[in-house]
Image (cartoon, rainbow, N blue to C red):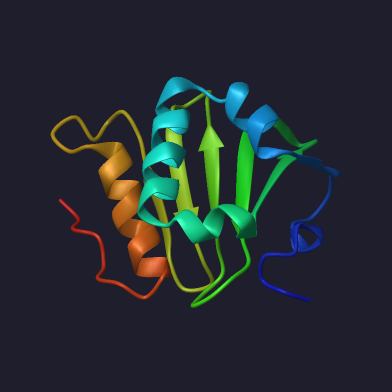
Length: 122
């Protein structure tokens, strides 16, 4: 079973959402994040699987099961977080990053997940 298989995540049910529906319901910072992500990596749009989890129905999950490494993004609108992770890393980027751009920090983490440099930590 793949790291990204949501059935590994304890209880609850997962529901797929198409990209348009998922992003239309996402907060503005999440739409900006995904726009910048897909502009930087246009080919991963086809690898993206958007999901909602019954345990946290307001959160949006995006699973990227592709090369070079699989990773996920979680948008938590209640705490205004962008969470990025893979088998080796996990980072949460939120409003408390006042002196840094949380979207850029989350994109830096995605670059790490795709084999790039590690994001700067303050």
